[in-house]
Length: 622
Ligand code: BES
Ligand code: ZN
Image (cartoon, helix red, strand yellow):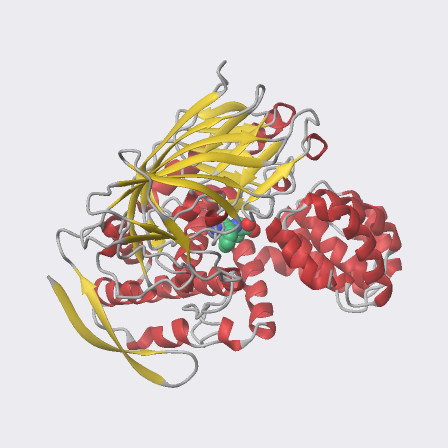
């Protein structure tokens, strides 16, 4: 059965258009198609709606000498309509041969290459084709892959590699229908060199074995961007019965100590929004080139080592990636235009976990820092990228990765919570996750669901249209007040009025108070003032990456030379884009600093993943 109805959806700016959409509730449909508007993901060239892959089985050899993955993937397909072709996304892959379930060759050719989306692989199917096995290897251009030499690891003895699938990089290491609107189960057999240990977003081994061959299963259907692999000299340490950490041996102790609250986080998350559906929750702490803070690969979050601060002050990142086990991995954005459904919900959920564990005044600091980032985004981003529902056609989906999705999404949900009350909001979210689990949805699905189940048809007051489809911040955006930050602001005032740094009372300041302090030092703060702060608090030597990142920004602005040596170390060691981008942008503002930055970058670039060097190349016109 399918229901056709017409709705009015405001799109891009102030004009309204009519969109005709279909909600399919056919009992025979897979989860992919349930309750979905007939919106096609335009960041794939595959025919994922027509002939969806349902299961992928990988056989891969990891070759560190050639920096190559090679082997095969076997796709189980569902071809109810008896299409004659299976079209897959590929980018920078070498395809060798393709066979069906009986080993019979299938012929293939390529569609037109697209700079952004890659090269569609068109495979001819027979009437009885059920499985398609593709023999292939990756190339040195494969964007998902980062290959590290031993010097780039903590232990310095073994190489390391990892994949990053989100948003459209999985196609550069697996020929697949690379749309978040698809869900597949997968299994994998991975062969690695002696001494190395592979882990995936799947069931994982906890110890090495002698034959260097490892088997993985992901039995819950996930979107292709969540298929992930990391290989290194790893060890595992349990936190509680269902959580644990993988890291290089020399870092394991520090990582386990930092992440000791992980088990409680999962408990708290379950209390809030329902059972954890993925069995285990583990984290791997990667080498510093990892381009993100964290990536929510199911069952195994990939994390940057820059959260290992020694004082557990940056663990909200783990709460964030864990929250994605519901928002993102269980209920998934069907297109990258709906990215806020993943990230906005996750920030809201993350802060609820943090509130339950560390209290409201702690979370209000995080929320206020988020709000400031959001204001900055609203001032600087072009209006077409300021809407929750995006239009990323012809753009790389990473363009939508701004604080609009994260923080405007968060404040939208926080506003709804304020409007209906927390008990109702919580019940609604719990039901939302339960009702949509293992489905992929678009913004409009959510709006229909929310109008019916949260707002009881009373949606005018909350101004959904403006929140979702208009740039900027609606007037009913919640206001965050943080008493702890007020005190920090008083300190800023005293300091800028001439009081010395060693007179400041900072004894019980957390990392977040320091970030707030440093960020809000007024324009015109001098190198001498920074030197005074530095001698009192040793900020240039901070072991906390978030503090360092804001401190270096101020140091560049004030041309505070003492900080440039540690800044150079930071830029060469850390590949996290969130830190690199603002630093290189700030450095590019004067010729002198830009020259300096180019010199540093010449040494640092090979330590960055594609995601990061692609961004920095553009900033420095490299
Ligand atoms: N899923 C994102 C990372 C991502 C987004 C990768 C878009 C590629 C494209 C992850 O959950 C995330 O949001 N990471 C943040 C940390 C978080 C605490 C805001 C990051 O990496 O900074
Ligand atoms: Zn996220």
